[in-house]
Each structure stands twice: as structure tokens, then as C-alpha cells.
Amino acid sequence: MSMNDALYASLPLPIFLTIECTRCIIYVSDKTPGSGPLRLAVLLPNILALGPLRDDYRGAGERPYTIVLYNVLVLLVHKEAVRLGFEAIRSSHGSLAGSVQDCELFCKTIFGQKDSSHQNIPMSYHAVELPSKLRFGYYLSDGMMESSPACKRAVLETVSALRKQGHQCIEFTSPLNASAMEVFLGLTSSDGYKKMLSHLDSDPMEDSLFLVTLGPRLPSFVCKLACWIAKTFLGDSLFPRFFSLAREKSVLEFTDFTDQRNKVAAAWYEQVWDKYGFDGIIAPVQSLPVIPHGGATYLSVLAAATITYNVIDSPVGTIPVTRVNSDTDNLSTDFVVGASGRSKMFETRMYLGKNPVYDPKAMEGWRGIVVP
Image (cartoon, rainbow, N blue to C red):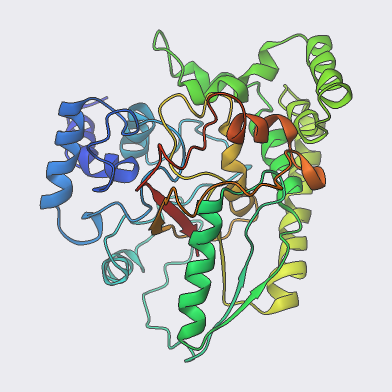
């Protein structure tokens, strides 16, 4: 890395680190990434920064991961993700903003700029006149894991507020989330995560990557045995469906999954956007609110809720809507893990046992997140 690259990376770094730190959770030691001094270093430029970089637009814990310093450095220095050359799931970068007005300012600034790879047409910003009444679709669960009561309430409160303003909100079933997750796992694990993990050198791997990268590190017969046990004895048909795909693949398999990706994207437009004519979709960003350190070690699959939109390459914004309330956000008495084909193993870890990850009393005051 040259000196110029180092300076370029170090100056905006604290601001971009606010993607995982917000004002409401910055002082909670076991939920906020980093140490006390690091949180202070993140908070100070977050207060002083101007414009679209002023705040954490996505809210605390859109992903249940700790700060990924290395990924941010690579993003800033190389303008790419850690897997250079991997384009099967393409990434897009947006602004972190404190308001819609800041997002608009950001768009006015960058729209029309030439793409360094010359893949996008440089279109200048133009204001869009929206109709007075919009048509929104919403769903409360992705069908793979039951959303927590807090996240459901965040969606319903948003829907209620929109309806009061005269907008139409229609509940629908998200039809392709599991298929999108299969495509995502099939493509991203094609090299056994070798390139992604090669950047670590002697550094320890982030805990949330344990389950993700476990499959390629195990002999195939062990993976098959684990899938058989999960389905036969634990009654979970979704876990083996995903876990069996986390392995190295041939070029033929890779192109087959790429074809499946295109078919899933086309089906989503046909079965959702075109069928219902929605102007937008409202849904939980993940099944749980922000979770404590270590909570994602065996629950990295929570990312499945937004992986759908990565696969179909649809823009997404994240807005904090409400906070966890221990009086209203408890599980219903008739809740059954693994019902309707959901993952029994993941839901057990999320909601049951001596130390469930979802605990409304311990999470009192935490943010619930909605993806519009």
C-alpha cells in the first residue's frame, strides 16, 4: 500500500465504521463492536461529520457482526470487496446518512460520475415526482426463520403509519427467499472461501464466519452425515438444504448456479414486482434485533433475510423504527420451533434453551430494524 493509499483509507475510516455503531447503542459494552476508546473514536467523527456521512443510516446491527476493519480498509483502498474478481453476487455501495435529505444530497453529488470500470451509463441526477398515494408490499417473516415479535412490530408500526398517510399496504408471502439463499451459498462458496480467508494471514477469523466456512473444511462424508442427522433426528430439513451447498465446486456447477441466480431474479420480478405493482417492500432486515457479541457464531444465517435482495440485485435501505419492549415483544405461547418448514435448529438457538439469543428483557430499549 502506498502512502497516498494509506492516507486515503485512514481519513474516512472512523466515519464508515459507524455502519455498526449508533447513538442508541454506542455505550452498551457487550453489544457495541470494539473497545471503549474505539467507540469514542467512532462517535466523535460521527457527530462532527457533515452531509451524507454524518450518521449511521442503517441503524445498529443490520448485521449481527462485529466491526470488520479489514473489509473496510480493502473497500476504501481497492474500491472492491475482499474477493477481487468475484462478480457472481455483485456489490453496490450506498451512502450512510442521517436523513432522506442527506441521501438526496449524496445522489446529487455522485450521479453522473463515470464508472471506473465503464460498466454503468453516467446518468445525471433528476428529481422524481412520486404519486400522492403509493402501493407497498410487506411481509413479517422470510419463511426460513420466524421473525421476533420486536421485528414484526417494527414492520406493522411502519405499515400503520403509511396507511394513516393514505398509502396502500398489502401483505404478501415472500416466495423465493430460500431459493435465493441456496444460490448465494452455492456461488460464494465455490472456491471453498479460500480467497476470502487468504487475507486473514495470521489474524483470527471473525466468529460469525465459523458456520459459513465450516462446510468446505470438512470431508464430504462428514457433511453428508451431519445433514442426515439434522434431517432425520433433529427434524430440520432447511439446515441440510443450505449446509450441503457450502463446498468447493467445479466450473460447470458454478455456471449452473449462475444460471439459477438469473432465474431467481427473473422469477422475483415476475412473481412480486410485476404481479403486485408495488412501489416498495417493507420487511424485517433480519429475524432478530441487534444481538450480543458472539450471538452470530451459529446464526450467520440471519443474513438470509437481505441476501434475497443481493441475489436479485435490488436496492435496499435500512431504517431504525422502534425499540424492543419487554412488555409487548415476548414470544407467543403457541410458538413452535420449525413450524411450516422453517429451521428448527436455528429457531431453537434463537428463542429457546437456557440462554436464548432473543431475550426481550435483556434487549429492552434496543432498536428494531425495518428494510423499506
